[in-house]
Image 1 (cartoon, rainbow, N blue to C red):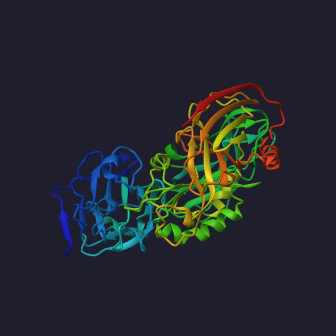
Image 2 (spheres, rainbow, N blue to C red):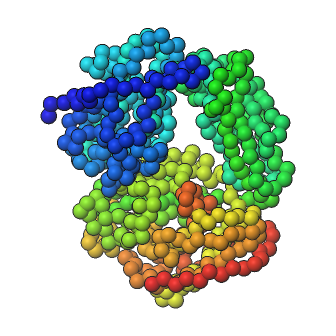
Image 3 (cartoon, rainbow, N blue to C red):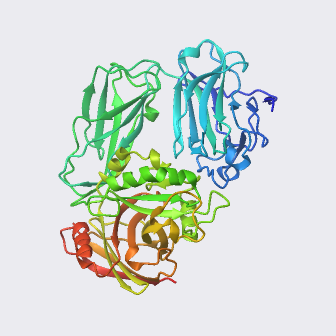
Length: 562
């Protein structure tokens, strides 16, 4: 189909002054139509890019998270049409007389592969009113919204247009979304604090490294600056950094040379900022400070996180990736002793019209919780979401190296197919959060392809960690407030009648604590429910009951499930 250039009538540029800096474009996409002055090029039958809410722009497998009101998006999953070189184009931007110019925009783009095709996204520039385009940045896929900054200094003195190009490369992929497009003149010196790294829980009298990311949003390249931090409003701790070369829009990863050693328990707030940029004052103090909060505990535990994979026995990409996934999980001693990852695999009834006998409604609930874009897909709490082969060992290590204040002990008993599950949760600090939920999951450790009816439509022969029941359901059990040293015990019963391999000795329980609002995994554990294996149960309990103080105020929450 011949490309059609859809030019929208009208032209409007938002211009304002902030510290004598011109704002060329400030577009939050608050309406429900493409803003005046914007245009697009599309081959698609659905009209291409649209402006609306995240809900209205989403589809079954391309779920766009909320960001900041409405946004602009193109959805290839919804139409499965030709979205090759689909451009969303800004109004003309006259940079004559500017000194330095920066583009910032929010972006949601998965960069996924499906059925052999990989979607792409580019930022392009045109100096001839859209007749020709040059790629100035390739946008990488990410499971979350993120803010991208691009230095436009090379185009100062010219009139340009920018384009956000999505390309499905002829496949049936997902799409892309953008929001809060800002093109502005920038100050000579402006160092912004982007993010910091500080565990949510730290141990008293133990040095803690303070690290994070700064970004140069000024015209000048930064060669030196002072890095400062303050604890609870106290005197700054300063380190002078020299020999740097931080260009405009470039990020700088830092670790302060003086660790913080907390001397008293309880909540603490840390503020980190840069100053003395090349010997000059920062000219925009509104974005300087990184603020971090943590709780100091008298003792902490090793954290084990979750690998929740969405898969299907009718999904060829799931089958092809399974050998590498299995190796990765083995290397992390999944569902075993000294594990970093505990695993649950939710079987889905797609790609449509697939029917997977291991699918349960609870799998659909978890898919909705994580805004599942398709399979294969893995969620590691709020630390990672995406294709399982994109999960790096470093991400797992970063998550499991963060201390936690929670331990979980499991004590199952089995009578035929009936499982009586006792799970005990202990905290080393006072913890009052209504979003804390305990999930108990019964899984079949191994299911052979020959056990399925209907049979799998892929060549995968063995399926591991297959979820059969979540107790009491996919929403878990909300825990009451915990005080330091207190144990809450949850008792749940279930008769497991939907086994596929049909062997209770092939069943394990996985337990994990999750913040339902943020999706963070605080702790997890797993064990085989075979009651005869008493030594294994004792070993696991010994491993996870690290809190040295005796517990008190035993609380029992009983619930039965069919």
